[in-house]
Image (cartoon, rainbow, N blue to C red; front, top):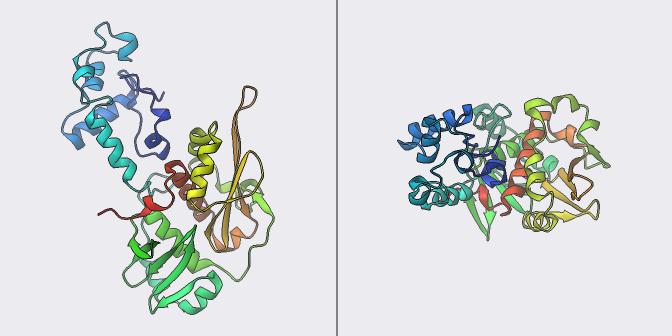
Length: 311
């Protein structure tokens, strides 16, 4: 259950949708024990509300404790204290997670960088619809801006306000490098197809399930919010469903998001579609990564700026 011992429903928190922060769970839960241990390891002390609930064998303070609201709530530091709000601000400004399906941190393998550096970048640019920038760099259209991929420095940069800004999102850089290395001559073919129509459809199960629930939780009853987030990401409206947008992640990799809003009779529904040619350019795990990237950026709702390095 996504409700903490303090009574906060973590399922409605953007950090929880992004996978940045897990729920504490109740004072009697395994999640609570894990969260307390993590807080003690990372912060030096646990949230006093969670610790008190666990020590007193109380599931939820507002419901089960006769002393609620006690000093832990009135004096902080959690919930909704300066410490909590500072944590929210810090994490909301950080890039979205760059994780594999198994929850491991993603990096660009050194062999990928070497393969790119040793390739004919002029030929790659022709196939990728990119631009050769210098001996070891390529400019690649990316959403409503461009990426500069530097094979010599092993880094990626985003163009923002006419300047190249260092990226701090390994998943985006990895997807760009993989696209450059694997893109073929085939052009966008149409029509739009769902994940089950792909040859690699069997891949998208279990931990490889496409990341759509976070977008649905965030915008299932907020179509105006999705429109704003999509416009900030450079999405092109399609005029389908209740809200639908095309996101041109890379020149030959459009991704389509279609939302049907929920109402009293039906739950909200979200579909992610692809151009039929996508499997000519990307393997299944890269398609999974692309959807993760788009979904996280939509949930954050700030365009591409969350991908920038801070400072």
